[in-house]
Image (cartoon, rainbow, N blue to C red; front, side, top):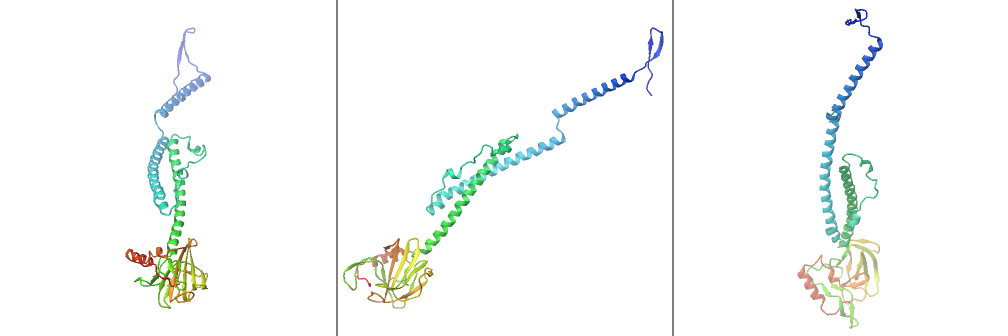
Length: 322
């Protein structure tokens, strides 16, 4: 129960009851409420200025964690950058050298990205510099990885071509000749067996009994297979890469034009057809349409000592067999 207040009235010389109007009461209440609100606002402002709310504390923890992850990511990106640099160095200075290919230009490998607004969406944050630097480096590595991938695609194709080249080059003797006793006449000017005059002998003659197997000296496609004036029964193989081989004076041909053959495959048999003095094989190698010395193409068959002996035998200015 509220206390009743009195005051002394000097006019009436009596104590009279204090009467408080509703307006005054409402004014006092509003004043008190305003003071409470102002005080509360001041307390809250001070609290927000110097103390973090639970939500702010959680957000700060998340920001710190994200910053740490970005720094870890940057370190990993730098490691990847070193690995990519090593791959590029090997590509330019080893792999492309092996295949006689030009290195990829640096301006192509390290070209930047166009557009000033590429990283606009992440440029208005407190840690924008860190985010932009990391994102930019990842973009650069992505592009370099793509270029390196295309380079490896090119090298794979070159490897296949190189393997095809190595299997296509004439690299063995056309008949079994392990003891080298069947090499009868070499490349160069020789005495013609019929005309008895010096004439350019554009191949090598290998003597062997009629019916001895004749082998393709490299992978290729038979371009000719039939009788040819001078060479008799003759086979010509196109090996690609500018190489062709010719096998003459056969007794019998085992392949047909258009047939694909492998190195070491039997294509016919030694004979004495055409212009020939005795059963033998006349063998030629052509490069870009010009005859070359077949002795340069026996590297799969001969040891260094055997090769020296073959060179000596082929250099003798004797009579050819055709």
